[in-house]
Length: 400
Image (cartoon, rainbow, N blue to C red; front, side, top):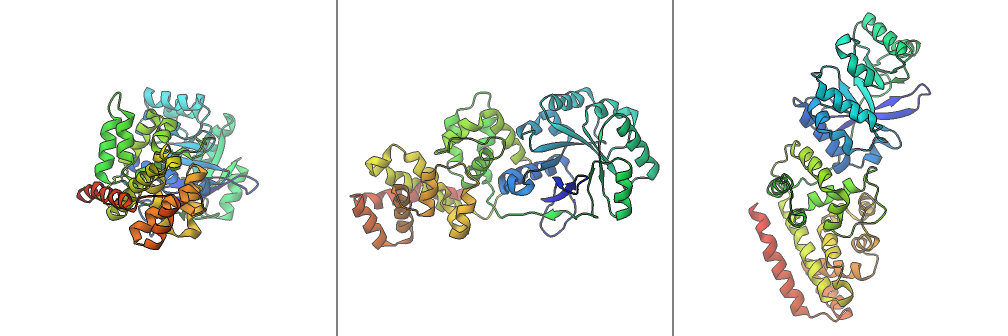
């Protein structure tokens, strides 16, 4: 995805428009399906990247298609951080107008994108807060639309400003915000991340489509997919959900999120055209670690009751591949308990010891295995049996 800054009259950044980009090489829009492009932008902003890094303390301007507006997708994002952009060329019907009115009543800011005043769009114009005028259209159209906006007390945003003359002209017309190449070209933002395995994703899609799905079944599928687990945690840690309590299990994460929101995010992820990826082996290893950490915890009396927390720690073990220098920063994106974070960071304590034992056993560091086993009076043969069993259970992942 890419972002382009939007400035106020004091030349301060008010927010960023988030733009679809299919790759990091071409800084142009080359999408053909609006639903899919918006799905990519929204899910990448909340799952692949950290929305707070993208917009700072500003607003995220995101273009929503008529289909997504009618579904109420913008309501999954806090009105404190999003400006809902509505394209002028949408088919205006009562359902779309009602959807926009509902957003307005819920406190969302609506921006009419590429707008030229026309009585056909009068209902939508009345609802909108910000009107974006494309400065590449004829001058008489710009002035006509700006005049109507001033008369109706609409905030004007001049976009596609390319010269200082156009910038000064926009200010004379009463534009509050400006955007365009004169200030900055869109900046590509990217980050490598795992995608959910297709088979797992399709299972979750099937489960959430049921009228009354079993939460335990959803937990079971997400618990074997590192990517879906990461996305779930990032979402919960977003500005919208800002939970006070830290998450210690996948089940707790789903309870915090709620089934309705989970359905909508799964719907958006589905439109990202998730396909088979090359990270099956990394997924399998993280699943082995998750199961192994849980089994080790069950062997330790003071850890047994929190076995699911150790499972979550093991499932996130693949984060360690980014290197310790980045691991602490990455963990800040997830609302995990301090115990789990300290375990993954090797800061001492029982979580750290369990993770160290599991990791050392998988790597064949027997000296470390002996040391930690002795510390907790663990039976080496039981540890060996547990590891073999975890590997066998995780082998099925290779067949997906």
